[in-house]
Image (tube, rainbow, N blue to C red; front, side):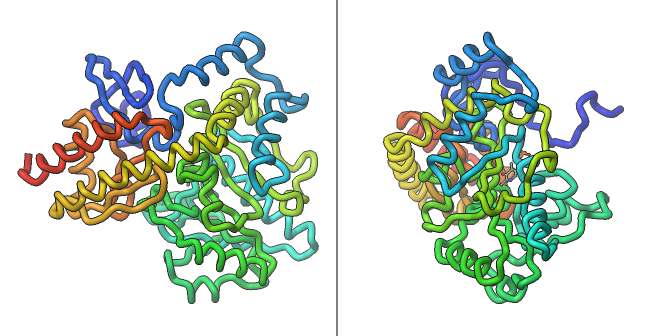
Length: 391
Ligand SMILES: *Cc1c(COP(=O)(O)O)cnc(C)c1O
């Protein structure tokens, strides 16, 4: 008999009833150290007091009004995002997938309004942009698209790192290039700065728009507010979600005035997108995460964690191959099966997240205390020893 919850997830037999900082407590009273943060969502830890306050204060005033009216909380958060990024304008969504949908629409409408419609969007093998019919077409991965055809046309995937194929694919007919500066689901694969720069030049040369998907790597996770800042290039359009709501569903599309020029009244909408509750929380997250001192602390914690992880890899060469990633979006490339290691981590009451390319992801809260980093390293070490001994 089918479970009452549609069984599209392979769920671990764990159920949490309470969270605090980097810790989660199960229904049977066990405490787990959380290095997944809801897959990069709980950027400021569980039950963060500042976010609880922002949420409850807003909840007592107003939860929802339609986008038929001005929403001051939305305007405030948009202004914060515009102030701190390349963008001139922001549309709020409830998720990364919805941000992806708008990014695609915006890019196509831009060219249409120029009088030279262009449909094709270049994407990359291993990419993840969400689970809508358009987002799975963008990814092209067999395990996501199989059985769901006919797929939305107009996407072409290029092998990660294949510069020649990329140069051949981007032409004066190309609508846009869409890429995660650091692939999340794809296995924490970082695009080298030089490649992001080259991509910007290639798009400029052919009049194609550059779309960055920073749903997972953005909002301070890389040690910059947005990961592309490391490379010193900016996109025309950017998708944001996950960390921006700190656990409350919220996403956004950021764009330059030029790229957004086609999106006039009536061309897009959302019932819930940018509601007062979500934006009150998002504004508080932005207050905290966009602060230079906070980002400096992320980088310091990341260096501490990475140093420990390098020595973990060195101590367990049969389990781990190498460390990858930047800031607090880190991946351990495994030699043994990643899901076995994730299970061994569960046995140590430690939450880690598998990714493609036989990687386990480490995405702790950006404000994880140093003591919790030390504890996580100790648990990872015990788990690796257990896996070595086939336990
Ligand atoms: C999670 C994710 C998405 C999809 O976001 P949802 O909120 O699950 O719809 C899109 N792109 C990237 C890079 C992601 O990590």
